[in-house]
Every structure is written in structure tokens, then in C-alpha cells.
Length: 164
Ligand code: SME
Image 1: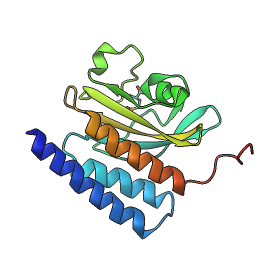
Image 2: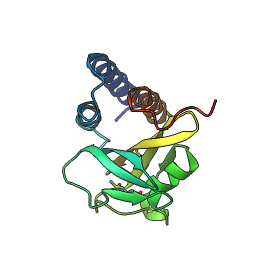
Image 3: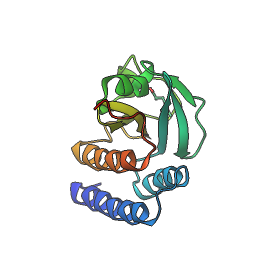
Image 4: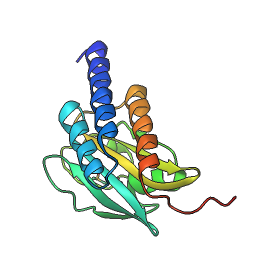
């Protein structure tokens, strides 16, 4: 797939997400719709999930893909998901077979991106996407998903009152 085609797909999915975000803020329906839009619109997004932080675990809140994952609760610090939550930074893994942190869900997965959903300094959840292509994710995926994470952060219940 050419870079121009990839860019056009990401632009299209952003417009679809903007329209959905404008419709209603009701979680969990919004989380489910966002997962479905991403997975069905972007061919290299093979499994899309949203995890929310509960205590010291990530709990799967919504997902879209060909199969359910067994990893519905992930301790913060475990897996790529747990590492991204602990660090509060997006992690792109171009080849999951080369990353010792990787927790396998699907045999077909080759690469993964995990984008934290943050309210101020607190990680309250994350967007996790698996791809069956090697090195499927680039800076444009990161930009789209970090924008989406900030939109979701505004709509999720506040994790805790500001310290101020
Ligand atoms: N691969 C993830 C676990 C979640 S599944 O991809 C849905 C990880 O390493 O944390």
C-alpha cells in the first residue's frame, strides 16, 4: 500500500471518529464504537482494544477484532500494555517477536502500538492495536491515536480531583 493511500485512510478514519465523538459522550458505547471504526476502516489495524485503569490493573473495556483476547486484565508493568501505562508514553513495537515484554494474544500478530489515555499526569487507560503486518505503525498512526486518546480523556470520568 502506498504512503498516499495510507494517509488517505487515516484522514478518513479521523473524520469518521470526529463525527462519532460529536454524537454522544456515553461510555461504554463510545469506546465500543471507536474500536469498531478503527478496526473496520484501517486495514492494518487487525485488533483494537481500549483498556481502562482499575487500581493497579488495566481492564479491557471495549474491543473489536476477529477474536476475543484472554488478556482482559493486565497488571500495570506487564506486557507492552502495562509498560505503556507505567511510562505514560506511546510504545510502538515493530516486531513483537523481538520484544521480551510482549504478551501474546494472537498467533498472527506481528506489530503493536499502545497509546496511553492521560488526564494530566495520570494514565487512566489506553488504546491497544495489534497488526498482522510487521512494522505496521508509523508516526501518522501515533498522531491519530494520540489525538483520539486526548479526546477520550476529556470524555472519561475524572480519575481523581486535581491536587490544586
Ligand atoms: N500484547 C499485549 C497484550 C494485550 S493483547 O495484544 C490484546 C501486551 O503485550 O501487553
